[in-house]
Image 1 (cartoon, rainbow, N blue to C red):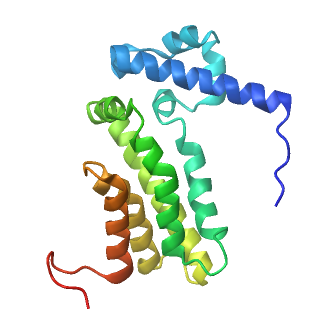
Image 2: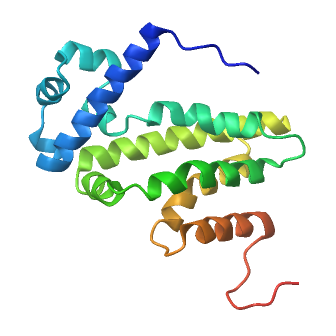
Image 3: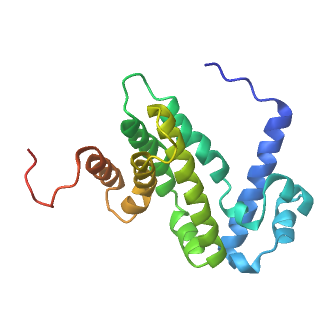
Length: 196
């Protein structure tokens, strides 16, 4: 599939959106989420508050600026996987390709502290997580031709989305991601039990 070239107008909109998100994150990390207004963000990005709201649904969305594309990327990982690749392996590869670079970002710990210390951001993040789970579960169900309320599909979606949280504190994040997906693929065994 050939991607259509992005026009100048779309590039400018994307650059404005990124400038707003970057300014917001910088201010939130410096001052704290509750001490920054949308006007502060607009001023720092050299745009009007109206422009901020053209690009973001609200103040919380400024922190989770990449979340709108997450659903599309998760669904694409399932629907556009390589021939012969299982849904589970496609999700494993997606997490390795997308989450490991995010986890290694130098501001990641500051970002996590910001979200964890701000009830409004924690609540917003949880709503986004539920939405991602529901949409990923539906995409998996579609791949297998089953109803969207399939418990098996919902379970896989939920655990696949939990892999980054489970791997976050591990020294070797890649190995942790692989281990969790191996458990999903092969079932849980007590630690130290030999594999068959």
